[in-house]
Length: 237
Image (cartoon, rainbow, N blue to C red):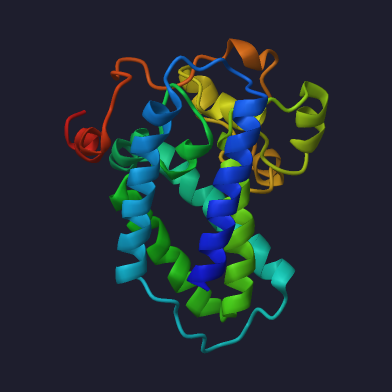
């Protein structure tokens, strides 16, 4: 299972990384190495930690046999987890690591604090066990989630009309750029991970009128952060 997911991640990074450099939305000032290396290194560290300490749960109840239903349950869970990260002050201390990137690009999809990665997986694994989702159900969601995460964080220029129409179904780059805005009222919108319908259903949807004017990142946080800076940031602010 890990092998299939890893292939999807590497393919996604290569594919969307190529597209965002071929057709960039923002002209990023930082070099390719400087804007991607800390994020990918942190992502690799998190991947190793999760692989070592979390195992796929055994299924006992077998309540969910539909891959579509399993997909929806996991996706709405991710919506509420993400919203919780912005609601609880202690949770935001760790989630802010993800929002500090002012050069948002494909690699930003893996700029998460290790504590958040571990804690987000614990309730999800319990949910999978409780509802009896099969490993194939989980694999399907994880692969789509991995590719969508790379897509929505990419600096790829998707034509505005296409981006807007797609945003009625899934989270698109412009839709998610608003979530990474320095304006708090915009940051506290668009919590969905894959399907944007959760934002519309739970009244948190917002599409930016002029995406090119969005100022990314967190105000008051220095732009150059290495992996160690990112790991200790929650304990300094």
